Image (cartoon, rainbow, N blue to C red; front, side, top):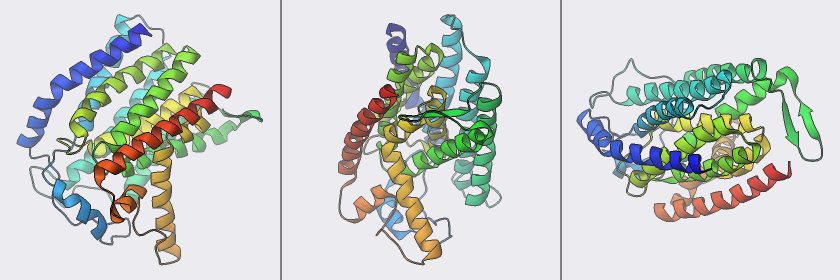
Length: 336
């Protein structure tokens, strides 16, 4: 445990040192959020979102790029310096998901702005990006099934439920869901990164209980890096994750849950993320098939803004709710 705490501090220190020059670099590259009219997946305007977020125009995006670089390099270095015995395919699953979803997110960020100008040939429509997410997730899920032998879930009272080949689409669904849930939640300063810290702390406890040192090392390093980022991301944020960060972090959180075998606990530990994507999905289905809204606005944090809650209040309450969800999720994990 002392090694893991040391890695948290090391990662936090290195990321914190690099963040200030990295923010300056993003400013020089004009890699900043634009004041723009956003559209939903049906290409309809989203005036509520624009109303509460246009004041953030000019804030650099792309913090996830630094997190991916620091965490990936430190993880490989730590495995070597600490002589950690690890499964090559487990490391592949973690880093492939982390980097590939980050690359997709980076492309999506780049489509919005290159040197301060929109460019038409960049970018993917939502359905195209969704298809690529599924392809990447299916690759990860296939490695989990064929190379690492994952094919089951554990539910209290039912013991092990073997899914067989169905584990592949099941795992891919979990990965895609959390990648998009995290992306949706990354709409308020400090919301998603703060919630992620709570989730990572929970899974660090689970890996310690399972004596899974390689996965614990990755989680510890990720915790430190995200913790340093959070300092600059809380209201009023000096930097945002961007899609490069939100997609990669959401996807790798799902992979951590799958590798620990605690997918049911994952749904509770990441309960706020589940609420965010569920509220958006309900709204989308209602608008698509019934041509009316269920909520005044979605996702859930945007609804709270709509009814008058201030951004810092929403984030603090979400962190508290995330902490309570994490306690319940840990209870589920440990009784299993």
